[in-house]
Length: 224
Image 1 (cartoon, one colour):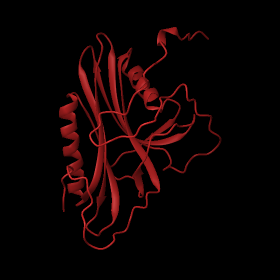
Image 2 (cartoon, rainbow, N blue to C red):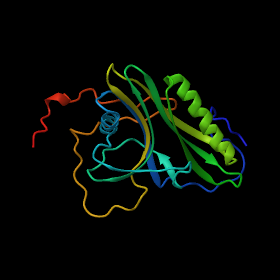
Image 3 (spheres, rainbow, N blue to C red):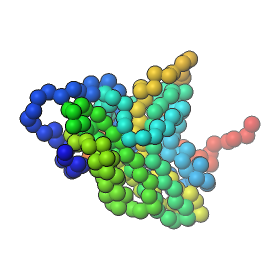
């Protein structure tokens, strides 16, 4: 079996293999927030930047993705939506650096079945070191399951916290339609609030484009 994550092309030859079907879509994104008053504040800023500020997140553990997973373009999410996420979050403070990364790989089992796996990683290392470590982790997950890679994507980002502040880097694989648990109404998509998600991701990309402007948080009154 081929465990190299450097080869992103499907091998030719052989008969047809059972397909995953592409019935469950998701996307990779990253965000950083270097100016948090607390670690929780920095993390929440990242969620808003990712477009997840209005969603109800369900964190998933384990390497296996839903059968039929396929990558897609990011989309806006309605308020109150239940969203499956595989999240890596790294924290730094007072000038320190941290990085977070997430990756997925489409694979084939020895029996010829298609599946997909995910890997997440948080470190106190720079972007370059974290990317290498994430590739190694993805390779190890495939090796443990005797999987052959067909293609893969990853996204890594780093944050350097401002002096006397907390920073957070978040990398996420967002899968909005896998749970089939949504009950009751959801709100509208607040396009002016959550980040614009108008770009996909490419292999080795650090991050999807982040919003260029943000309201000054000091201008918001919290008086009740």
